[in-house]
Each structure stands twice: as structure tokens, then as C-alpha cells.
Length: 155
Image (cartoon, rainbow, N blue to C red; front, side, top):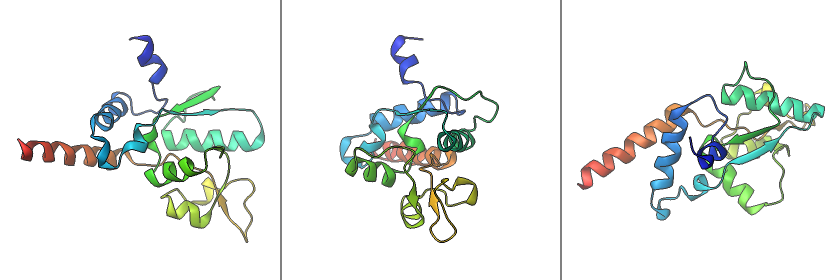
């Protein structure tokens, strides 16, 4: 494995499937609307605070890392996050990953609005949610299959 591959490796439990998806996205023409998924990995550091510990547990749950020790930092491929969330983050460049989303924002971005993904600053009157990497693998594999079919039809 080259040094570049080690640096770019996503921490998810998808294994080689994650790299296949990443490479297919990177190969798409820029006009296709998937440019934000071509961004570098999201790097999220663990700090040890209670809020960060809850965030780490949420990340591990969504990425299938249940049996893994808490890493010092997470490197997460962009395709694990909804494109709408990447667009929002693009417009708010200083926004931290642990910043909570309102219920409306979370729904708009396709994020999880389950009670288990609520941010510690959440209240009954004003529920807030973590920014979750929750794009299902099946959805991405269907997208790749669609791209493959389109390519076959053009040839």
C-alpha cells in the first residue's frame, strides 16, 4: 500500500467497497453535481469532552465501528455525508463538525433525526442533532450501477 493510500483511507467498516465508490465518484465529470463528494476526507478529531464523546459514539454507530477503540481522529470519505450537508458546510466554512443542527436543518440535509442522534444541547422544545454520516451503502451502490448502465448505453 502506498503512502498516499494510507493517508486517504476512510475509517468506515465498508472496506474495499468504500474505495470503489470513492474512485467512481472521482472519475465522474465535474458537471455531474457530485463535486462536493470529491472534496478531501472529513477529518474529525476526538477531544475527550462529553459532547465529543457522544459525537464519537454516533460516528462509530453510523460508520459500523462498534468494536473499535475510540480513535484520535476520524477520516471519513465525503460520500458518507449527504451532498446537501456538504453544500451547507461549503457556505459556512468555519462550522465545526460538532455544531448541532436544528431539526429542520437535519431533515433538509437528510440527516438522522432519531433521538439517539440528538446533540447534548438538545431540549424538548428545541431538539438539536449531530451532523451524521448516514448515506447508506446500498444507495451509493445503486448510484454506481446507474452510472455503469449509462456508460454501457452510450457505447
